[in-house]
Length: 377
Image 1: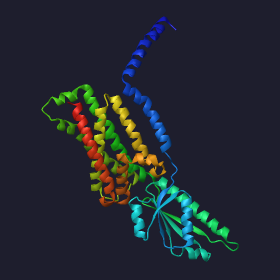
Image 2: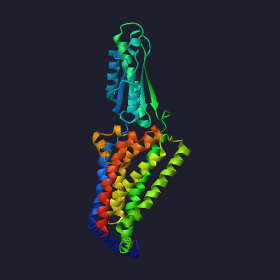
Image 3: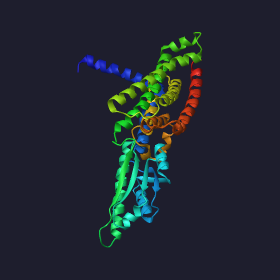
Image 4: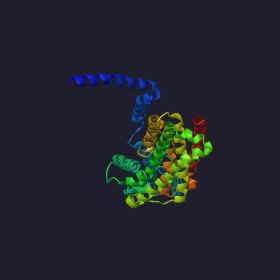
C-alpha cells in the first residue's frame, strides 16, 4: 500500500465518524431502519400461512338422516371446513356464498341415505367460491379426504358384501378454471393505487417542504385548502387513470371477467383513493424528510399487501392477523373489486365495505388536514 493510499484511508475515518454522529442525531430514521425490519419479520413470520384451513361453510342437508349428519361431522373433522350455519334452500346457500359469508357449501340430496343403505353410489356436492384458487384447492382436497374417510368408515361397519361408493363432487363457482390471474389482477389495482397514493403523495409533499416551495406557496393569496387540494387532486386523477389502464389490460391480456357495474366500481375506487391520499398526507406531516416518508410508507404498505388478502387468503391467517387486517383500507377495497368484477355484486351487498371505507375517509381526512394545516402555519 502506498503512502497516498494510507493517507486516504486515514481521512476516511473522520467522514465515517461524521455520518454516525448524523445518524445518532436523526434518531427517528435510525430507529425505523433498525426496528421496522424486526417488527415486520415477527409479524409476517407468524401471520403468513399458505395452507388454508377452517373455510366458513354452510350446509344444505336435504336428507336429514344419520348418514348425512355423519358426513357433516367428517367434513368438520378434516379442519378444512367450519360449519357456520345451515340453510334450507339452494337460493339461501347461493346468497351466503355470493356475499362472502361462506366460502363453501355442502349439499346433501334427499336420497343420500337411501343410496347408502341399498348399496348404490351416494353423491354429495361441495360448492366452493373459487374466486381465490388457493382456498378452493384446499376445499377440494378437504372434500376428497372427507369422502374417502366416510366411505372407509361405512365399509368397515359392513361385515360382508360390496361396500357402497361415496362420491363427493366439487363444483367451483365464479372461477371454474381456477385461474390465478382472475384473482390477482383485480387485486393489483388496489395495491398500485395504495402505492401511488400513499408513497408518492407523501414523498412529493415532503420534497416540496424540503425545497422550500411549499412555504413560498403559503405566502401567496391562495388559501391553504386550495393548496392542499391542488397538491392531491392530480394524484386522484392519476389513480383513476391507473384503474382504467389495468382493467383494460386485464381484460385484453388475461380475460379478466367484468360482470358487475363499472360505474359503481369507479365510485368506490374514488372513495378508496381519498382514503389513501389522506394516509399519504398524514405521513407527510409526520416525516421530516423523504427518507422518513419512504420508510413510514413501506412500513404501512407491507401489512396492506400481505394481510389484506391480496396474496394470501385471510382465512389461513391466525385470528390476531385477521383482526389486524380489518384496520387496513385495502382489505375492504379488495372485497369490493373482486365482488364487482367476479361476482356481479351490487351496492346492496357491498354497503358494509363501502361504509367502512367512508368511515376511514372521514376520520383520516379530518386528521390529515388538521395536521397538514398546523405544519404549514
